[in-house]
Length: 207
Image 1 (cartoon, rainbow, N blue to C red):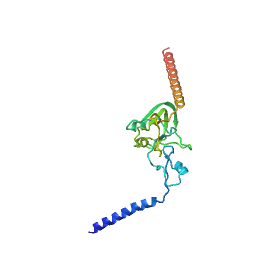
Image 2: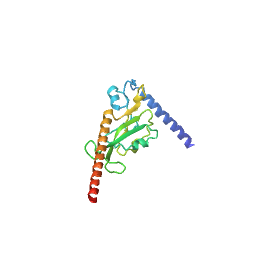
Image 3: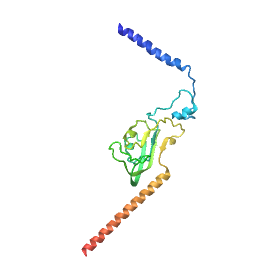
Image 4: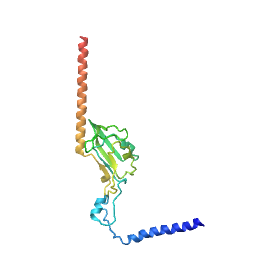
């Protein structure tokens, strides 16, 4: 009998809570967001235009992906982690450098806790936002947190091509490829010089 009355009590309580929320919203000014003309991806944008209770996406939401190329080592782990192949990365050789953050501190590989070393650089980093299912596997796999989800959740466009996010410009690609060619040419020249010196030594030993 006690459980019976407890269920009745819980029913009235839940009904009261629901009706109280409905009653409270009767006195809140309604705001119509002119989407897609108005960007509603961030709290700041909405706060500037509206004074009601509208809010943007929470900070930990899995929105559209973004890439910080200054932290990227072109390891392609995110591309391999993506289950639907919406990430495409091409890379070439570059000067061996240690990554640093904005204040000059070394960037650590978050899995090995060793300093992140960059030996290759990207010449292409594309993400197809139309295919992405926002699973977060790429962000979890990235050792330097170069790729991450933002709180941006909409990309209104009339073209599917516009949904392909390109993070490397043609100018950056050309510079990276030229540098890679210079590195390979320098390595080939050193190898040829070493081979020539070895032949000279062998000839001198025969004489």
